[in-house]
Image (cartoon, rainbow, N blue to C red; front, top):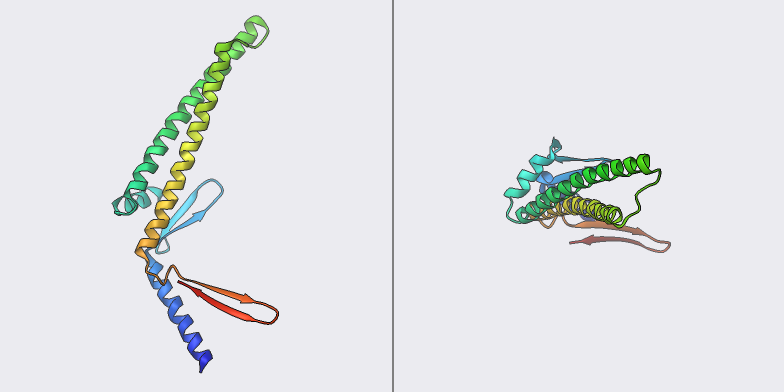
Length: 166
């Protein structure tokens, strides 16, 4: 009787979990990009962004994510252009004088360009982090408590434990 009760409770909890998480956004990580799906249908990042911006809990995070992404792309574009200019100037100076430019203005320009690279990379990383945090908040708000619960099964030498976390 006890085993039947435990099995039935597991089945009910798992079915509630499956029903509650049917509208959640699933992120599949890949090496260079992520794929997103809702109800096992693939959606683009722009569609996920539109869904998250219309949600009251995640709209601010999505706005910040877009602002960080814009800043990151502007910084990286400027850094690429500045790096190309500095490399061309260094090669031109080497061809004319036979040595690389080692004056202070060139060193300052290299330092500023390096800082712009770092700011761009950090901004894009922050943008992705905020976007994925918004997905987690969205999933936690649309799902009820059954979808946030976990089963933990521990097997020891002298014991067997089953834990249900709410």
